[in-house]
Length: 81
Figure 1: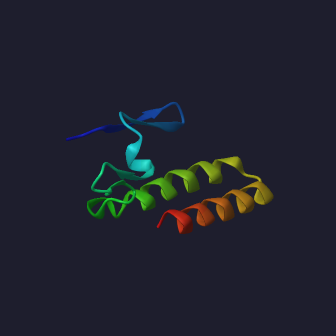
Figure 2 (figure 1 turned 135 degrees about the vertical axis):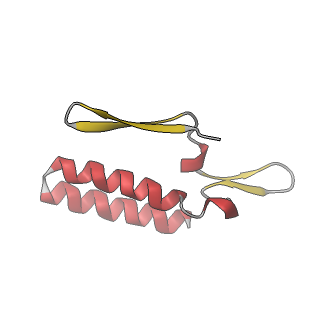
């Protein structure tokens, strides 16, 4: 099932997801089932999210801001993984 799309727009691209749970880390229900970034079948979701952020950060073109945001993203990923 496809729940995302990427299309060229102007000089860039637009990426759209129909659902954001894949970008979160959740434990659901009484059985404590791991979903989102925690799901065993979704081991590449964090890399996709990192790639999106890095692409966005590169567009900022401000080295200090880029450095701080990269550090924040890496810290968040360490917490989630």
